[in-house]
Image: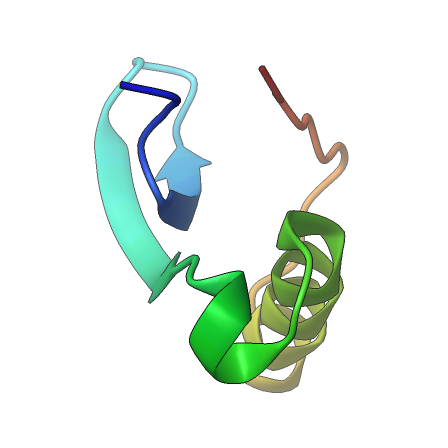
Length: 61
């Protein structure tokens, strides 16, 4: 298994509660996008929906 083909955005509170805000299935042969393309699109989408944050943390394998 090379990795999981999911890119997601989670909202975390100071109490360490998590909420899934957005996710994408990463499938380059079908959509032609890299994980970073999905990441940037999701950040724009989250911001346009009114979510504000002090920090964005990304993880990649």
